[in-house]
View: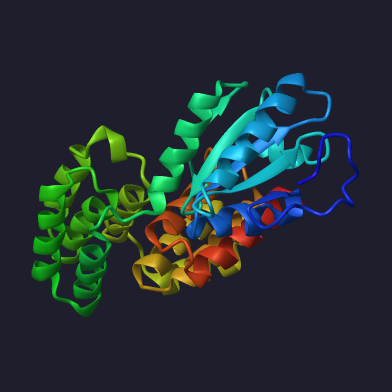
Length: 302
């Protein structure tokens, strides 16, 4: 790990802790967090509290023995990513899991709080002894055994009511069975502790996309409109929804990226919001998500 005041040519100490630039952020933070939680420390060489917090975080991450990784972002050298994530003061720390920010804090905090913060993140990747049951339920769902999957997810929740993977799985099983009202009711009553978890957000995104699909227009007609009027942003947005409803997810993502390229602020940033809804509904390591996030990132920092 670079010591404060060293040059960027110094080699990082192992893979657990590294300095990350804007060009590396997608790979070393967003994509890496699919496998293990990643703590991002936004700092600057002139920041006094950073010199205390940084080493303490590094020590706690090292003690976690691979259950958590850490990325350090020098805000002076990476101003675009700091602006994109709305970093207003430093030190600021974000934690990413499954491609999304899940926790964070600002300012230097006591060592006991740092340890608790890291320990909490380290537990995210654990299965609480129910990992095999969740994997089995997911396999059932993928194979079309919807009722069996729902029963298994429900049984897991009987033992661990705040198991985000099981809760999200149960919602998706209800959606797969065509029970949108039951799925919506589950999402309305999700425990607060897991309400913003990646698994629940994925289920919520799937429900939103299903509702959109019910009102999607004909692909051919919308495609003709976009081809004849390329600057008709509403038509392009509607085409993306229609493509997604027709199962052409990658095509939908491409149309939304093109809309974002043409006018990122159109309709209060609707293209970006819709992209995130689609990404949330898919697995974080889905090739469509990884490719789409890379393209969106290149547009954001162009």
